[in-house]
Length: 181
Image 1 (cartoon, one colour):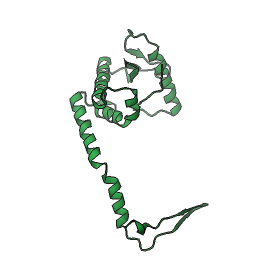
Image 2 (cartoon, one colour; image 1 turned 90 degrees about the horizontal axis):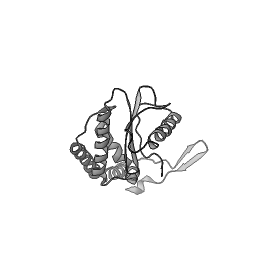
Image 3 (cartoon, helix red, strand yellow; image 1 turned 180 degrees about the vertical axis):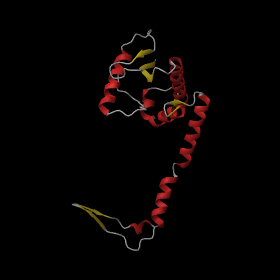
Image 4 (cartoon, rainbow, N blue to C red; image 1 turned 135 degrees about the horizontal axis):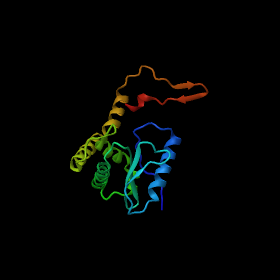
């Protein structure tokens, strides 16, 4: 009952191959653990070094943070809890499909909590308030961009419109833009 990874954020640059190896190793380490086992474990071969995995398992979802040894383990567990509770409030009973279909909201919520690898906000009400304000702004601007683009095209004054654009072997016929007015 193991599906593909739904959401990831990396704060360090890794090649795609390395990312996939780390994800596979993380999944292998975390998913094989007993439900009563500690939620902290040392990194494996690819994660290794000074890093550790801190995770929580909710229903079918695993939330895993890979942090260096200077991080407070209980603080990261609390951060995961706040993240999940905020997701639950913003997406109403969060499930895996919410993470797939609302990935932008998931990123926005995490961005409200963590900025540049540093935890910036853990107050759920404050995070929800910021996300709600962002959603209202997005809704209020939703129709503006297309309307402005059409107005801009209509107000353009073309003395002579090109009829064909040729790029190498490709020829593109340009419609009569004056007919938009």
